[in-house]
Image 1 (cartoon, rainbow, N blue to C red):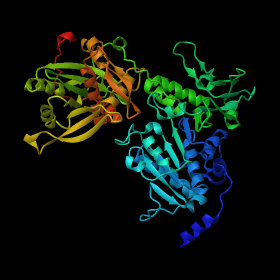
Image 2: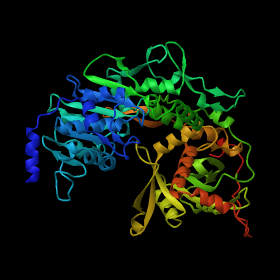
Image 3: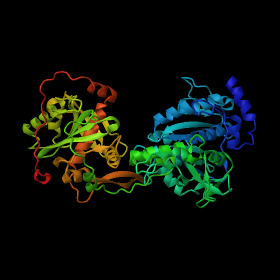
Image 4: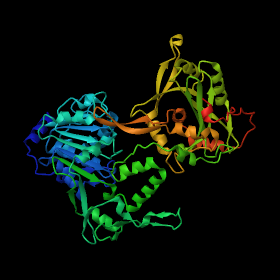
Length: 610
């Protein structure tokens, strides 16, 4: 009865004449889970128009392409809170997965409702048996809000909605089940409302795959212009204009990010951090670079965040640059709010061969564990032993080719000899192969039989060439009719993910993820050509772009690549505790029995081995 009376009073109360930004500053209260700035919400000047565009007549879509940690989640929450309070309607919020949606409900939406009395009185408190307020669906007078995962087609295709908010769109799967683009599925639910508004928000990823980049290109492309405190010239803040940080004179000289300055595009003045803060916290204006229309597009980089100093931005850039392509891509996406262009060129074997190192007589001190990847062919078995250290730095230890048909015991006996071998470490200890992964795509039953009797040290694996498949997963499979009650662990390997990680690491400088290869015959021209036998390209499925891997023309063989991928999968299965392993290797040696030496390798050229 009390809830009914409260609803009746709310229905009679006229809406206030407030914009979304006005509402946020009057009603919104931030908690410690949202920001260091606990208390009343205060908008930065650039945030106001983005929020107010959601109720601007004629605007049907808003695209926010932005860096991480610039307040985009709070902007969405302010829009949600305003509509619950002032313009109640059906609302749908879409997140990359259902799990992320549940987290957003518990960690962000629920605290906002609790801290804003105007929202708390409109939404019933959560109760176990109250269907009006569940984790993913909340009702209020005049509307409701549903939180859904882009990986769940059922949650995207039910109720009609007037306000659609899609958060982190570049983390969505290419397809919601088998039904196509999750954003387009969700948009179909807005057709019943002529005044419906869709809001797309994300940090971009790879240019050719980025949902937010495609949406941005069809928007009016607005950038926030701020005045120079010295000359008054209006300009968008660009990374290319952060210059003037010092560096020692010699080639590898130390950088001095603390000296970074922003160079004004008008007067060429070198502005310090205090002047930059004055620019981004003062007034400015949004200016279109595209054609005005019903789709508003906004771009915001971390340069507009008072929480990120120029020194911190430069330091993060230098660190990302040292990390290679992978970390630089993340920096461009999350710091600049820009997409990363991937050319899709095939890597050059000559470049890889040129960076080989003087062979190591013993396992290097930073090499802490060994794994093995095994590829099975019709007339031979190939295997690579790989050493691993912290940060997944790797060393190619040895590459073997065991000739003979896999349906005969001889090649498997030689593989057993390899798995029983030990290599001397610089600490004086000897390391054995911790885990081996054996390809089961050929001679499947034979491989199952071999691995089943040697688990948990040897696993059968099968590659899956699909976008979004993790590097390793486990599926239980039967060995066959003759042993129907006996099962073998089949490790499903996401080969697309593994290739992306490996090829990115091959371009890194020394350090985490770096791949070391010895200048020996086993790691020669044929091996390098096989390792670099694939390249990525952009393809389309049901109108959605995705990345696929294809063979490089003239490089038909890929056994070396498969062996390295399976060795990577073995490491992920092992999940080594690096500090404990390093501590163990630092212990004094005990008197050990004679160890099995690695099997001898033929030194014939690769071309004569087949």
